[in-house]
Length: 339
Image (cartoon, rainbow, N blue to C red):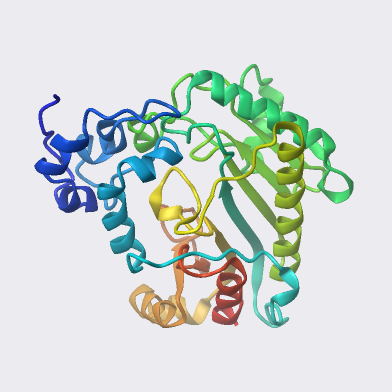
């Protein structure tokens, strides 16, 4: 039996919920799909001192086999009850209104994660499973039609010219994130990873990054409803193709919605965001903006991404919740909040 590890992230949810007693009970167990262990799941919280959550799932089994650890962490993080269930709703026709014409929105982006049943999630996925996911996706991409059709660019053996183009478009995901490395998500890099985008560059899929699939719909301006409608169509087209070829569907749990490698993304796995100029709020200052956003259940960020700073007066405003609300509800909150 492995000794109980020292958890460096002392204030993380892992430190709070992974007791020595639970560790002793669960640490020798390996999951069926990808042979994942509790030690692998909490590696980030053990290795680093700056984690808030600190745990990843290596496959769908992890959420079941290590439920005594995952359940309380998920309940605390998402603020849900032990018996809550999650309902998905991707029907764009249910969205009321759109961003008002006089709102200075520069661009809109909605992303979700999806995972295919029977394969490990990124922290646990085996080399063979990862390549199988990529092959299923290559086939799915080749069947996309109309405004969704485009090209798949594998990271392995990518030509410099293509690579630079993807960097310039801000489409390329990079290796080197310490959390992803510690959690085992960059094993065999860059094999089995790649990026698909349609010819208009408004529909993208990242393959085998932090999630098996990150599906993204985006465009200039504030047509959130249009962006959501394209996302829903794209997800369905990919889902139908994968199912037709392999008989496998996306991992969807009654309790936790769409399964992702990071429990913070459970539920919709959706981040619907706009870049919007807020000169008045910039003058008021960030604390005032954060407080207002909290009231509207949205989240402000600088426009350099998750940990980036603030650039000028342009802010990234997105839905705050992931689990316990449907996609339609979250997009609606974002539209209403921005307006």
